[in-house]
Image (cartoon, rainbow, N blue to C red):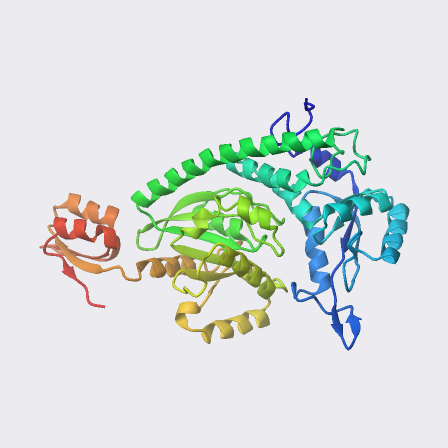
Length: 464
């Protein structure tokens, strides 16, 4: 029988973890692999799998910890040439960190790497402190951010799959706060094997629930396609400003804070483009380097809005020192979703946070943009001030309009019904009100072209 406090006995809720996290003194440790040069390890050279400088990676890990209000009292880099199978770090470094933990009264160590269950357990025994790795930390954040039923189920499924192999009685500092499988909680129930069985049963039930939720989302997408409005989806590194830009473009109030993974659940709103065309704008979860594979898989249903979008807005924080590396990480996830990055007609880069650039940086970027082929030029914007947003909307409209025919239509000045039909079903590119007729130039979606020609058989197609 599971306890009422366990995740098996109740719905997933991260709230108890919130109180634990906010009161835990934390060490963020960057155990980064070094390259070897001339037979010796270069402590400053990043490894081949992550080209970022160690300091930038540690800053990001510290930001992740801050996203769930951990009390980070120390952050340190621990370069190593080869991970140890038992503890990841070398014996000497483990002893050194043990002394730091004791001196600083640290209760939690965040290792910015992927640990095996054995490595995690051995480090907890050696240090007498709770240890979580990068995957565990990101899952903890996702658990805190999920709000919709689908998001909650997806996070819980990934959370349970990860924790299933980590049900070990190795650390009991926070046992009094709660049982269960949370990374920052206690060790859970005493019958580990029984817990594994119960977790598997819970995972099976969640998978069935998710199938129903996914079918519902599929129906929603199908109904949107029947409208049909083009879908424009945001993608980008976490904290690039997607939600702020989404709010600016839709006048919505999606959570937008200077915090990693402020948005988890997808949100969609209708927007009106410059010439009256409607589109569906979708805000999605931010990407990050070394995003756990299980999360990409768990959120694939959520990311189907990205997969099926007509236009992708790749939002980048151009004021960030690692903007190029962040862009590469986003592109890596898009490839995993089987999105063709060579399709420049579908992807628009949005260089956000222009308000944080000084004059010289702006001039440099403007020169760079001017030298790029027109179809690849990004939109330089500030979601905070609204700078460049009108131009971005025009760029979206131009991409959607590619291949769409335009027509000249003459209407009787008294035929308000036909004029209203054009406004409802086409983009009005120009209008000339004359005494004898109203001349309207419209652009129409291919699927609506037959209806326009049926209603206005004398409409004349524009050249070019």
